[in-house]
Amino acid sequence: MKKALSFFFLIIILASCADTPQQIAETTIKNYLKEKLDDPSSYESVSFTEIKPTYLDFEYSSDENADIEKKKKDAEQTLWRWEMKKLTPSISGLSIENINDSILFYQSQKQTIDSVYRDALRKYEASDRLQDGWTIGHTFRAKNKFGAKIKKTIYFDLNKDFTVNNALDF
Image 1 (cartoon, rainbow, N blue to C red):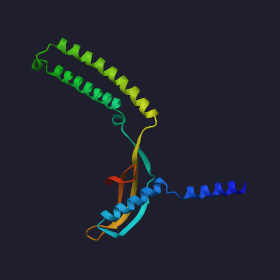
Image 2 (cartoon, helix red, strand yellow):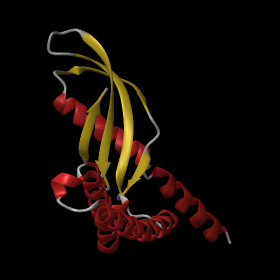
Image 3 (spheres, rainbow, N blue to C red):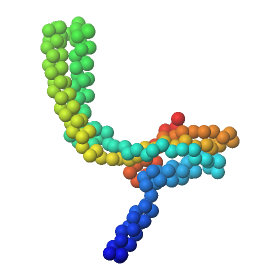
Image 4 (cartoon, one colour):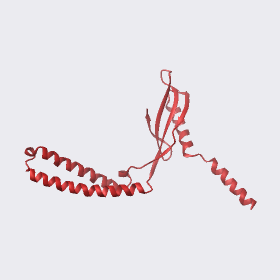
């Protein structure tokens, strides 16, 4: 029993030593900034936001969803073109009745596609979406290229391996 209890405590101690995603992201960002800043020695960390996972967008989550997204956009564009023809029937050479019939047809198609889109989107949102990275904000002070100390907040997009993909400066 003592061996089992000792083993249990050893596992807890080892598990608590592992870095959290928050800690890994903070270290990655500090290292990234030290490479990119005009005066890395002047860097002072102020705060970090809580790290949040990011997920693949609906249209990138599967080929089927990409196809549904494309059909939805195509239907919207086609309907818009027919509505523009209604504004200028003399240019299109079609009668108002033909244009109205086409608009009704494409509205019906669009409603069907919208229904399929909503169902697929609901399914996607209810599923275990594929995580593609992380986002975290960081406020810090550092000297700029003129030697003036400034305070900045930058939001970072990190991939799943905690490599900086993008840094949005605010």
